[in-house]
Length: 312
Image 1 (cartoon, rainbow, N blue to C red):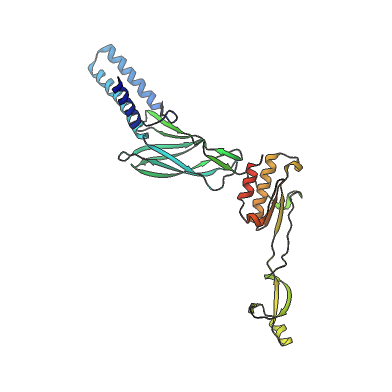
Image 2 (cartoon, rainbow, N blue to C red; image 1 turned 180 degrees about the vertical axis):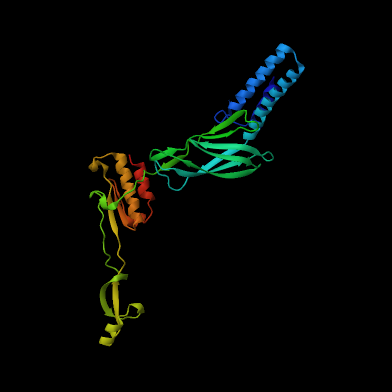
């Protein structure tokens, strides 16, 4: 009795190495139901008539069902999947995820594998032994903040299509940060509670506006010499120009004062912020708790989008 238990545990661990959490589930397909019906019909006819040919046919059909179950089980054996999300994921916007489908069997390939995430699917006809295939599947998240990836289903109908076998893989421990929904924004029309202003730099630079004239000194840029004026005064005169115009913006986020829908206000602030960066503004983002200045975050939208995504 003890030997039987040991043999059973070895078979489960080596031939069918799936835990209860990721155990293989089976469901007959439409073709499988038809084949099962024919099998039982021929078996019933063989019992009633005693015809040896019907018995032989019935036995072969039962063998096909058994072989189908064993081969499909081996086909899913040692199939692993991992994923990495795209850099920026926004609510209510499809995002592409990179999945790595691995066949860790050393000698046996796998055939007809389908990877499904929610309603999206990707099909792999042939996966060689000890190899990895890269798949890209779109995922969709409805809410901002920390989310989890839906269950991944790895299924197969190999070899005869009588049964669909699948395993479910749950990545609930891995949190995915989803940024607020981005909408199309026209900066000219938004309300004045989002303040935008332009500041002209007082520093010298290579802009178009003249700042002042001064005598040429060693180290000055010869391209800025004012030749006509230098000819009149008999000495080299150089132009001092303003630095290129710097566009600055102050974006205030205060949903308590706005009194509107929180999710809409968050989505709107994120959309305006990205639009300002797109137009080369230097943005200071002011919140009730702190200020994320341009000198701190530069042109990276991640700190502001992260704050808005996790705002409660």
